[in-house]
Length: 316
Image 1 (cartoon, helix red, strand yellow):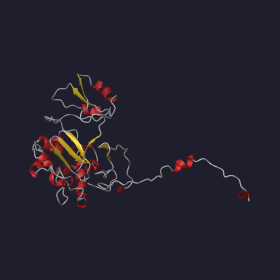
Image 2 (cartoon, one colour; image 1 turned 30 degrees about the vertical axis):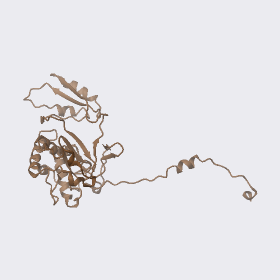
Image 3 (cartoon, rainbow, N blue to C red; image 1 turned 90 degrees about the horizontal axis):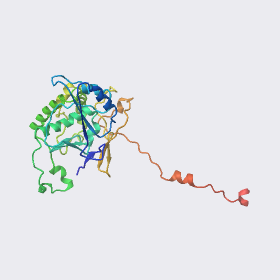
């Protein structure tokens, strides 16, 4: 049965993190600047900054503060009011799929691996968030234990969290609405470009595009059906451009710890590509095993040099 894992948090608690609220009156912008300069990027704390501002005046605070800190700065805009918090889990399988159960969003490891940036991830999550906001996950199909009596081998035949076409269409429309009112409104070109790359390689990726538990990204012919409206505003796909990274390879971003049941983001420094073949969208990240004979060098270095006793034969 697929394993659901949690992204390793920056603080020990898995579901709870501290939230600090800070308010300022007129003239407090400089105090905000000084505060953010002292906050480390991985503090594990969410800071809510409230500004004294005329409600008819557009705030420039996110743009101003982003210039003085490495901590992500986002403006709260959609005013989503849900009775329970929304959580996310990672399913350690490679087919590109997401689904949601109640207020929990599940995203596959393969999808996280290949998404090129934060805006693309926001677009993917917004689709499932739209299902939650629209009340599409209120059924109780799996709420009773007699529905769960089946073997691990038959999981995919008994579990299913797919939505019907009407719900998928409604979720797409709501997701686009949420994204347009989000900090990612001007960055959705990368999400559309990801979908363009996925459609270009779709006919060769039948296994990767076959969702097992949720709704997939394409139809049986490899044509993109999810959030396809974002493709219209995306730049043209040009795989010959070294600086156009539409999608990443599989296996290069998520590290699985089977002992602790956690997956962790690999934060490696960006490397400039020198060849188009280095980009490898949706391909498997190459690895180079390095074999070392344990103890051989150590024993050789530790062995004392012993001189053989001189004999008549040795001197002849």
